[in-house]
Image 1 (cartoon, helix red, strand yellow):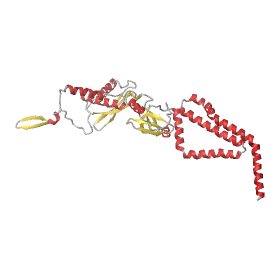
Image 2 (tube, helix red, strand yellow):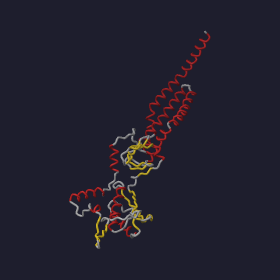
Image 3 (cartoon, helix red, strand yellow):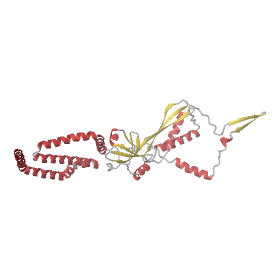
Image 4 (tube, helix red, strand yellow):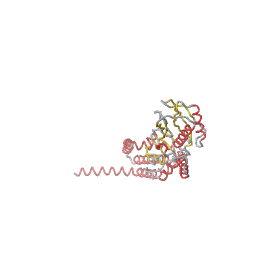
Amino acid sequence: MEASTNELVMALNTYWQAFIVKLPAIALGLVIMVIMVTLAGRVAAALIKPVGYLSASPLLRSVSQRAISLIIILLALYIFLKLSGLTEFAVAIMSGTGVLGLILGFAFRDIAENMIASLLLTVQRPFRINDVVQINNYTGVVQKVTTRATTLVDFDGNHIQIPNAVIYKGTIKNLTANPKMRGQFTIGIGYDADCQLAQKLALSLISEHPNVLAEPEPLVLVDGLGSSTINLKVYFWINVESTSVIKMASVLMRDLVNLFTEKGISMPDDAREIVFPEGVPVLVQQGTEEQQYTNPDQTACRNDEPSTDRADSNDEAQSFLDDVSSENDDIRRQADEARAPEQGTNILS
């Protein structure tokens, strides 16, 4: 028993002597570690200043500064353990940090992937806040971009959150990067109609509309031959910031139908429907005389002398139908007023 006690005392005495010998090195390592940890943030900020000149992205600066700070702190811990004589323990800590990082990398792969994608998006900037974009199958105004996801406000007022990794690997169509957008629609005319005349009339009507751009010029081309119609494809260009492409197409189709009807250009459907604007005539034979009647249900609602109230109402309806203003500003206003469901700092400006 006394021998064991003596051996323990001798071992403790040996460790104490070794500690006394290493005490200056331990103190030096502790001072170095405290200084490096304290100055890690400032040193990292100084080292990333060149990056700040190259990119104004706050996300890029923040992530870079944190990464450099972490490296400086790990280096300080390694120096402290090395000076303290715990070289093997220091190597184990550094190796364990690498293994731990590998494990965490697999565990949080999606988070890391979105973080890296957000960094690449801030550097490449395929879109900006308030841009109208189409990402995969989603179209809307960019409201917010965080380190995890991008929030869109679609034209129905819905908030759509798309992970940044999906955005970076997907198809991005920026609809406001180039304000010019081409619209198109198809209108069919009968085989008995003058095709060239119809093309000239359509091209003249489209070119005269103030919201249709002259450059690039509009086109009216024969697109195909249907069972009962010659299909004309109409192409026109508008400024998407001031004009809605779907509203513009609606107005042009309506005006073309009215123009073709006025000029006697037939527009039959596939069933070759026969329309009697004046009602269906019915011949009734009485003796030797024939009398012509018209279906009263077809003509009862006809009134060639509209009242003043109806005229005013028609003017208001016409003004509403002729509205081709863009919806982009309305959606942007909704995005500004709406609550952003995605928390976090907006990394784009």
